Amino acid sequence: MIELRNRLLRILMGIVLVTIVLFPFANDIYHFLASPMLKSLPIGGQMIATDVTTPFFVPMKVALLAAFMISLPYTLYQVWAFVAPGLYTHERRMVAPLVFASTLLFLLGMAFAYFLVFPVVFGFIAHTAPEGVAVMTDIGKYLDFAMTLFIAFGLAFEVPVAVVLLVSAGVVSVPALRGARSYVIVGAFVLGAIFTPPDVISQVMLALPLWLLYEAGILVSLFIQKKGEKEQQQHLQ
Image 1: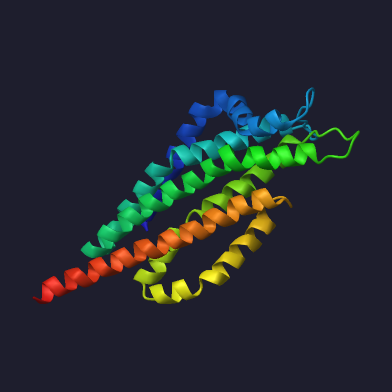
Image 2: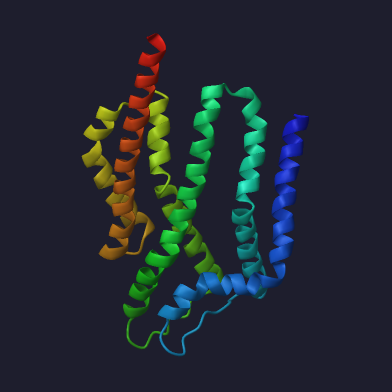
């Protein structure tokens, strides 16, 4: 328990220190986050703040989230240092790459949402507004919407890791995953319809990577499975 407390305190201190460093740049970070929406607005359009404290707290929330992402490698190191002594050697060899891959894939999912999905979604919203309606999004609601898409695409990019873990744990086999391919494709488009605006392009932009990453997870699982069987045969010989 003392070790757990110390690790948690170190994680918290890391996030706090990075947040303090980013505090003077909170407005600039929010502007970077909001730039896809601002570029999609018509000439003269702008974002608004409907609450008194929103102009202060929303950039601070963005700075805190940025601090969490920047300090994530340090956070994962603390988690790894806590659990590593209780793992077998083969488990350590497997967990470390999975932790690295899951972090990288989540960040790639966020980057995919920001650079590719956001311009399409916000362009669709701005151009489908009825004539005479000024599109002026509240900065707090924009943050909530952006975080929803970040989480959706970040988790979608975790599919290969989930597939590898399920196969490695013996919960499901590679042939069973291949047999469920049609259900996964349908489910991917359903999730795309839920987490994106009601246009086909943004729906496909979530569903297609989800399906392709599922296929990538199957290939990686098959590779790991064959490698394990080969090592086992060599050990028996």
